[in-house]
Amino acid sequence: MTASAPETPPSDYRILVPREWFHVDLTQDRWRGQLKTYVDREFAGSRTASDVSRNVWVSLRNMVEKGLARGALEFFLCTEVPGGAGLEPASLLISWPPVRRGAAPTAEEFASAFSERKGPGCDVDVIDMPAGRTVRIRTVTTIDYHVRIPGEAGFLHLAFSIP
Image (cartoon, rainbow, N blue to C red):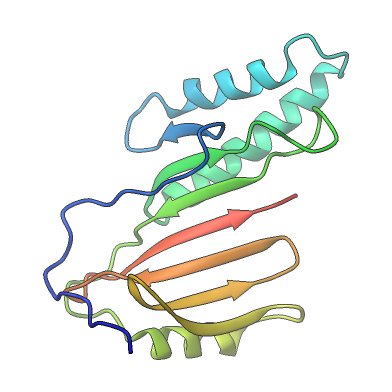
């Protein structure tokens, strides 16, 4: 039996990721510089054409900007990309989309809304995790967890992407 989650909203959260993952704090205005540092470091000394690194930079920047429009807080990038430089990295984008306090649906209601919009090759289910009932959405290259925040304050969205 799963213990019920406290109904007092948290004031903070902690996510443990592998030490090698590069962290970009999206709550600060310096996120573009941090992202550029990541791209420069990954392509330093490689013989990859500059347009490849520029394309990776643009793709990551677009991903962050889209995430920021949906409440993104942090971005983690895996610095050990299989196959070498030139591929987009594995990533974790953490968001807290704005929801009017008290208006957050249950995990089952939230999953139902996603199930109605899912495409082929997408699985939506509700699972029990230590943090409580969680909506999990899986595709071939992504896995998203929507963890309900106590106090009906919405869902913390953990979006994992693997190229």
